[in-house]
Structures are given as C-alpha cells and as structure tokens.
Amino acid sequence: MKCIRCGTDNPAGKNVCVKCGNFLYSPNPQNRHPLTAAQKSARRAARVKGATLGCLWTFLIVLGVFVFLGVIIFLLIQFVFPPDFIDFLAPATSSVFSTTT
Ligand SMILES: [Zn+2]
Image 1 (cartoon, protein in one colour):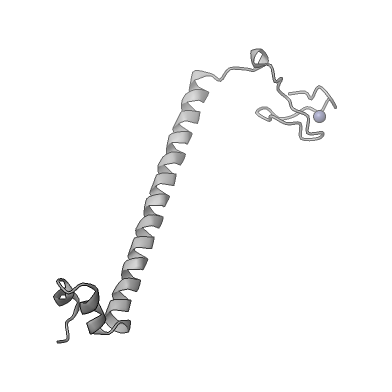
Image 2 (cartoon, protein in one colour):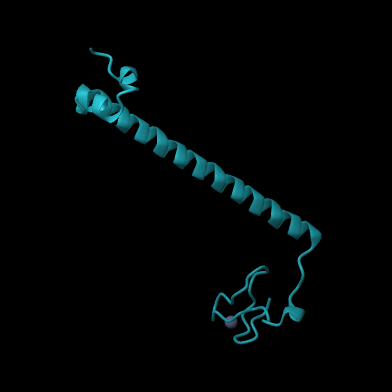
C-alpha cells in the first residue's frame, strides 16, 4: 500500500507508514476495506484463544496464590504459633490442628 504522504510502498496489512508514520487508512469508515469472512473468523478464533489462555493463566495464578497462602498458614500454625493460641482463636476446631496434646 502506497503512503499518500511520502510515497513509500508499505507491505500489505500495515496501518502506519514504515517510513514517515502516516496513517495508511482513511479515518472515513466508508473507505476502509471490510474483512473477508475467513479473516473475520480467523480474528474471532484468535480472540477466543487469547481469552481462553488468559482465563487459564488467571486460574493458575489464583490457584498458586491459594496454595502459597495455604502453605504459609499451615507453617504458621504448625511451627510458629503456640498451640494455646489456636485454642484461643478457635476453641471448637482446635482439636483439628493441635496434634501434640
Ligand atoms: Zn509515508
């Protein structure tokens, strides 16, 4: 696609001139080339794939944070807090945590 400002021949698919930075498309929506059905479906598939990957990574990160917090809390209860502190916090469930009596 030829730049209307500097005349550089830009590769197809570029929105901005590689030499002068001028916009290659017109801001008028009537002058834009509509995407073909294949391009539209490819773009939609890429978007769905990206969203799925994003959800997966978010899930993994949240899961990792929960596992990390669980390990920290377990270590705190097991090694840092004295057993009577757990009794003080939750008297009904203290038998679950306190193994040494
Ligand atoms: Zn240009």
